[in-house]
Length: 514
Image (cartoon, rainbow, N blue to C red):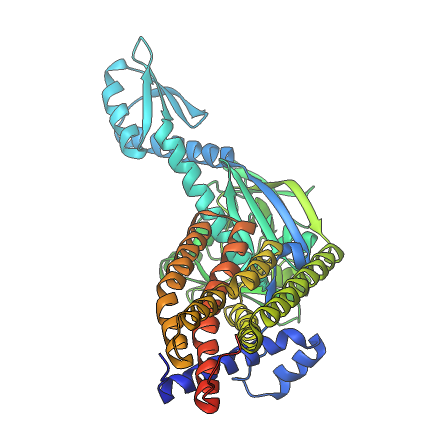
């Protein structure tokens, strides 16, 4: 224990240097960090700890997902598929329509009931089929398993698309999680609530429809720039937004902002076929049930690329391109709770956290110095290395620091000297037992190691459990606690031992000042 290999010494010193270098950007002003990013080499540390919503301020939004709209849409598609299949199989019916979470059909002859039920089972899984007493009216609705599957699918897709949209905005470490059956919680540090809602709340469902010039047999939708004007469209979309592979803001030949898009191979082939078969006919670009534009097809468009124009501003074109890249939400969402956390509240929390950390750090430093003298001073130096390593790792990993995370750091500061206290007390016992200074130090480190390892390991397990099952603030606490356990173990065992062994070999004391 009293002989440290040269490569270990180099490694310990390199880790300490890493701690001080990568934690340093947190101590300088933002202007100095900006200068460093622009003028220093790329490998130099410039990252700082990300502050969470409670420290930095930002937006807190709770959305409710309109899953009923998805059920309604699925019911309409089921009706369309059922109507097509019945006509194909020459099954007569007197009425057909959508019901809540399903479809109902009234047949001309009860003898066609079994064939109709087979069509329904093939069209939709997890359904309950109810037949009237006369056998002519058949109603198919989703069962409990089917409803749950729809909810889970819609919610997971919504969360994934929201995450993509927020990531496009550059917001760091947002919290996006499901709450209850149909709600999504969003916490975005440093984000503007109004801007966030304009990006998140838009469904961004894009589709291309042929225009029905007579307006019959289809549906009518309003124009985005003039809702009073409506246009008749084919009910079925020719191209949908899920065929897009990219969308970018651009400018047309008139220097007007547009959105340039590119389709996947299947979409490109279909777009080519549709435009080839409908030259000189109008088609409509529909976004969220509003017609953005309805140009004529002058020639076949077979390259899989096109532009969407609609009198956009530059900002609107940028936002639309972002939404199309991220994908359409599977269902509309509505804000049910909105809170804006101001930076002043965060500043107060940071100030209180700094004060608590400094008081805790000063108290531990003074106690160790008074209790163990020179050895206590060595433990104090190791404690400063520990704090530097914590902030270096938080900065390097771009972890988010929350108010509970500050509490974790304060707790770590108090726990960081536990290992040194165990070692120093063991050394005192060995000295009282008559051992020489070198023998006492060797025995102190050797015999205290098992206890130190067990205590740190059990605390680390608790931190991992909190991180795995906790959410929000609990995760913030567990992250700093877990990092603090690892760094304090390194600082207490490796850094302090290096200083003690170096002093011991250099001074060769006859008595230990402990």
